[in-house]
Image 1 (cartoon, rainbow, N blue to C red):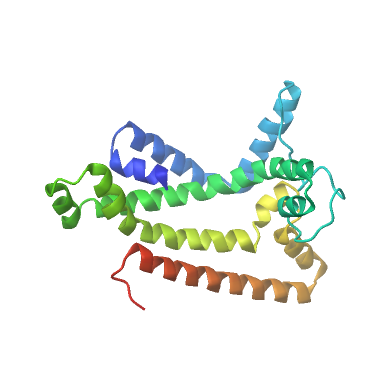
Image 2: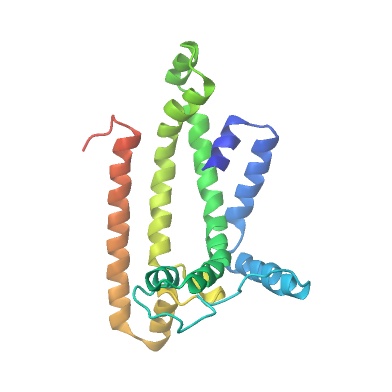
Length: 225
């Protein structure tokens, strides 16, 4: 979102061009290829050069060190009070989280940029400036709230997608998530799991849309339900 805001405020200037290149790269790059590149650089080459490297696969390198309560290694490590296990789980999160974030970054940055450019041309922005308000107040108090409505909608979709399981990223990084389980269920013909998975995904999407609709009220008081 900051990338899209900077791009809109510096329209057709160097920051805008750099931002658009990053956004274009983000939504044009296949997630599996970007994941492999992260593994190649930050695991293989860093290890080859003798530099501190990041784990390339798995949820933790200390399997069995703590009992699984939630199924999420970071939370399980915190619950068990095992600091070393928690830090190891966080290290394993860096590459897959970066891969997912970079892919969604491009879409959000473009949406925020387009919304900000449209809002900044509105009459109430001109009026706010003519009243002598500081540019920072005009941008963040008046323009940004209205510009964030499309971005919040897209963020809700991304959030539901992430909770439902980022199948390709989980496969590339051998992450034991629900996406991997759904892939195994398809190959094994486990219809019971697939039915449950579909039901959970539908519930997540409904809840995410509900949260987005509620967020609209705080962003734009004119919206009533």
